Image 1 (spheres, rainbow, N blue to C red):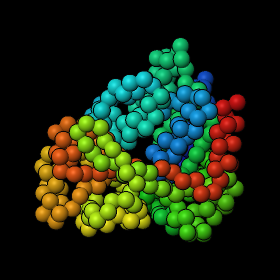
Image 2: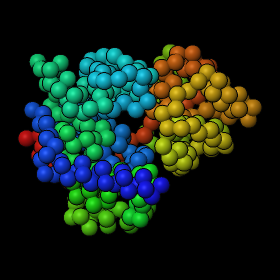
Image 3: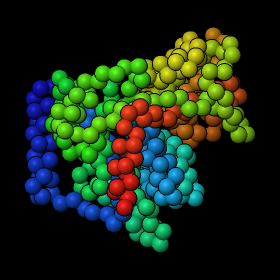
Image 4: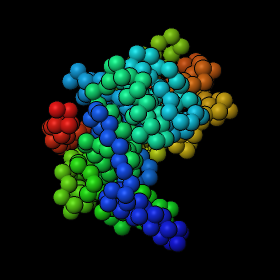
Length: 345
């Protein structure tokens, strides 16, 4: 892997140098742009943070537009997922995380585009009579073709990378020194009881303002045919669960369930964004039925399953749940919101 790592590192160095020297030009959009990204491959909690920012903007009376690549989608190019009034694509067409964000923020404009600049230009043209108040880029740190007014970088506290290596030998998309491009570093997925964090020290090394965020459970939703219903995660009585998911870092999902007091007796994990087949879902149900277990999955997986009505029906008939999550800003909430407010003025 070392030769490939060297080639990859050289390409990244030249690319960043060209942006820094102005050889590669950056497009400026006539509304504030807030980017949420990370420096490693894998889950760092970007979607919950994008959701947090979208909700914060909406609370200020500002309509956000969210642009994401749409991982795992069947479509190509720029696609309108939600016009802020109607959800127009399903998870197969737009990607599970994107549809989840659109469902959680129905007033937001949501677009998928491999090239974020193309997505932003589409929004400016399509919604020129009701421009959004801000654009939020999902996974935008490496997409330097578009200017951003606020660059938010997330680092997974559970996967410190000081001695890590670049792809494909390690998980770093860029050298750690590239953190200095960020306006604020948020150490994500922090254990509230853990006060120290080596990623925080790394952020301070580059004189970057930092904050700390964890993930807290939201609602436990029972999947039903005619309208789902919610209950507190800790009030599941004597139910025992089979947890299943196709996400990055499923162990964190299991840990969250157990911290809620839920009895996880068995697990089935799939690759991140892996499509569910009829066979795989019925296999999970069969395994759960044999052990007299209820099923529980993530909100992202639930959205993916919604794209296939017969699978949703099967889960509703058996007795299944999904857990929502929310970002929990442990330190630096005012700092982060002040930085957002400044770019909106």
